[in-house]
Image 1 (cartoon, rainbow, N blue to C red):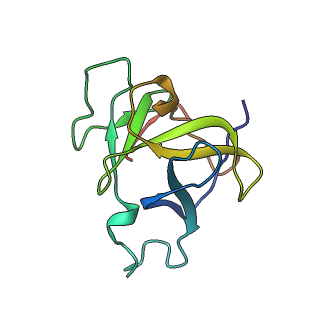
Image 2 (tube, helix red, strand yellow; image 1 turned 90 degrees about the vertical axis):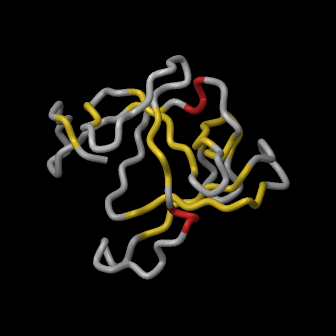
Length: 128
């Protein structure tokens, strides 16, 4: 299980789909050069809603902490697609493909691993 850890990056998506691989909605990661300081690029393509796991009808309550180790789903606000993991290989990175998908299986589920700046797993609650 290799986790990818990035700091000051954000996920983006739009209604555009891949012509190969899983053929689903393109999701990319982009560096936040402004690191949150009045970023003018904050358009709908970067907004995601945090929801509970696919196997549960529970939802995340706005303002509640997300515990380290929690399983969540990320739903793209403007397209209503879930961030989804596949075994397909990405044309861009050569790594496992991640897309936007209509949802409905555990490929939509993501585990929250909280890691400190020194690389140690942190078990405290955090705001997302």
